[in-house]
Image 1 (tube, rainbow, N blue to C red):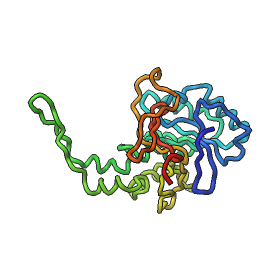
Image 2: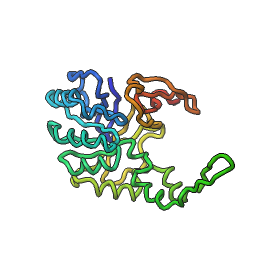
Image 3: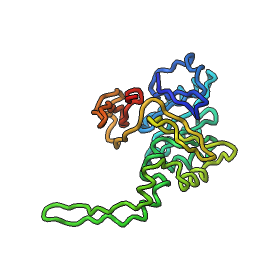
Length: 256
């Protein structure tokens, strides 16, 4: 049943798939139930999804939503969902545009795992935009990209916790409209555990189920399976799985 998560080691939460059968009588042990999908947006326009939300709220459950990254086609459905939710909720967003939409609504934004990692994350965007343009040179019968080494600042940034850089923190908190609360950041529970330093103004929602590897681009819903399938292994021989367009490995499979 879902993936367990915990918030700052203080609250016990669970993440439900938007198509998972609800068992509302079993959720009273959790401080909050998150429902949604960070890679697939089909649930955003589903009347059944809103029915599930209403059922959870009616049962007295504290609910949060995990939203996929937005494309222009998805934006209207996302805005419609924000307007029709039965009460103000915490919305975990996975791109900067969704962060701003939620910040300007009655709901509370939180930072999702994809937003922490993606190259368009404001934490590293300024480094990227200052990089020399990649030059494509013509060969005899093929083209190749001329490699440009990343700046020292970018390299240093990528090996640390992106979202907790001073630049990212200032941008995220500037978008955060609830000044009297802390901004939630969803991160994976890696083998080393919690981040060593959490800046003022942030709290961490640790995902203790799977650890994100990559997100595959959307092509067609017909070829995208809702079943978990094994697709390979890491260098440490840990199985990698795929469900829909998300690739991940499981914290429970890591060697202790």
